[in-house]
Image (tube, rainbow, N blue to C red; front, side):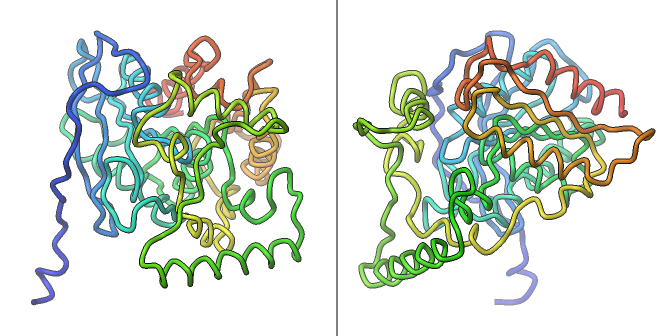
Length: 342
């Protein structure tokens, strides 16, 4: 095999479900189709593409992903369809190793590869004749909110980023919820994960961590009940969703313990909008990320970083509650920073 044949970018022909199998209703003013594109690691990603029916010419475009452990038929598709109804070309994609996208083994996440997934989506959009390559933004939901911001650090083609109800997956992996872990706890966690790694190799398959607990234990925290209400009921259940079913591979968390997201968030020059619920257990991620985003801001200069806290909203309200998600504000943000170029 010669070197040139090894370096060819190939799109794997994935098997895709063509009928409407989303957790949200179809919008008659938006066209929908399935598309494929490849990332720099040679993994083919599957996406739902939403395009406004009554728009012509080159459109501003948005790539959407998340939540962490969800699929494009859930929250990200709802966001993408809504933005398309407002005049944007929008795609909601499954990350590498999950949903209808390619990549093996299945059900793993990577801070590096999943950041690349966003940039691969930008590649795809920039090459379309019906997209303005200078007007591309991203939306990340939950764990993919942090990953979207991480992509914006490195990808200067991303002109505006929205992170909705975001998690910093490195921080929660290393420190636990509410930063409750210490070095000794982390050592024990790493030890168990590496024992599991060896057990997986012995058995020839990867053990799964389990999705959202079902049935719920009597002492489940409120935010776990919120997850159950989304992932395990008709509201948000999907057969390909990791959180709705058997979850990630147990060892999938290993790279997040060693590779920190958002280290250079303060160097993002493009616009970023953080949207979070006032009653979300995860609000501290957005609060502290906003501090990082603005650490280099100087009084008297433009501040294109926004933190919007939604009164009374919890973490999962921003997954699918269209009466809670501030789509009007998100639309204004993208119109200002993509279309106006401010």
